Amino acid sequence: MKSIKNKIQKPFLTLLILIPLATLILFNLSFRVYSNATAKNELKTTIRAVEKEIKSELETDGGQPSEKKALNMARNILMALKSSHFSQGMDFYLLDRNAKPVFPSQIKLAPSQIAYLDVIKDQYLKMNQGTVYTIPVNGKKYFTIAYSLNNDDLSNLTAVFVLPADRMNKYLGAVNFILFAIMLLGILIAIYFSEKIAAHITVPITRLGVLSLQIGQGDFDMSHFSIPQDTLEFKQLYDNISIMVGRLETYDKNQKTFLQNASHELRTPLMSIQGYAEGIESGIFPDTKEAAQIIKRESIRLNELVSELLTLSRYESGTYKPQWEEVNLCHLLKDYTQRLMGLAAKSEKHLELLLPEYDVMIQTDDMILSQAVINIVSNCMRYARQKVTISLEKRGGIVSLIISDDGDGIPQNDIPFIFDRFYKGKNGNFGLGLAIAKSAAELLNGRIKAYNQEQGAVFEISF
Image: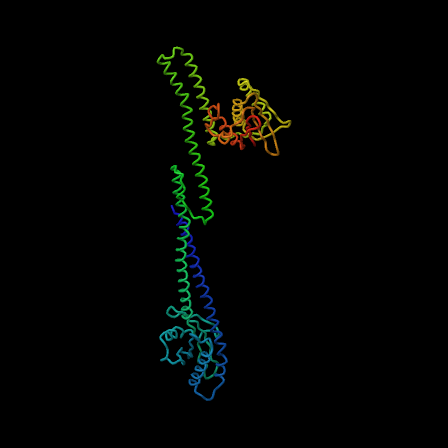
């Protein structure tokens, strides 16, 4: 498994090596093609430049012997070459039919020149005039062009102009050295900066990895963690982790509080059941029927508590998925009201339903919505004096389900916490009913709020 540093550096350095290397190869190929073409063109241009001198020498006789005349002509041609810009590195030979040099003399030839003349002695007479040939000698290339002397006295002589490729190869070698040095320097610089860039990326990620491990172990303290704030993505990631940590910390505290409260609420009926059961077993209660009734009552209470805990856990954990369907909310509220009439009669309260004259259609889950409405109405029944009202309104695209009572209202200190789990106001039951109603409303993509009116409390669910 590769690290982020390697994943950044390897392709980065590969590109930095391959691109300059490919450039160097292409440059060498194109330079060789260009230099060969230039050398051939230079030889042809040289012939044209000294052709007048050759013709002039051939037309001038003066009664001189042929050899002396050839030497004078060769010297004049050489002087013409030196006075032009084509003479750099160019060799000039005046050869007879046996490839023996008339000019320069044999004793003045360098070993490389002798080797060259040995190679072309069998082919120079076959060369087409004005055509440039490439002659390899001992691993070196020589660009050659021949010019036959059209004169009776000098018809056995041929002027040969030779341009060694060494000069271009030396120039190419110097350029390659410079390019290679630049490439090497670029690679070293790239390695340095890739290290810096990789460190700039990997160090914050490593820190965030340590932070995530710490969070996973239940430590939510982020005060000693810091990452570079000059990179937008890292800053956003750090901010999102901070938000996540805040929510996790809150959730962790809520879970601990929930477990403490749940264990307390469960312990009370369990202790009562255990105490009466032991009393019956030991014969302490002469009237076992009353003790059995208490056990039954506490068992029912315990069962209700467990049922509400399971419902709340199912809603908050996200394991329950709403079964969406389009329904007429007016018809649903009529059904809920019928179900709640028994509770209203038992509480000796009046339940009133106020509906608009038009149908209100929404996408919802009947079971979850009924849980929210019934829990809120049950809570209102507990605090109402005479009446609990259920009303439905639609303003714009917002549907509002409003449940109110005519009691004393909610104490202002209780309003911020009224939907918290196990938070019980005066005469409260388990403190789970409104928490379930809130979770149910949010599961249906709704919002719930509580406030006081002139007389009594109001709970409003908006979709």
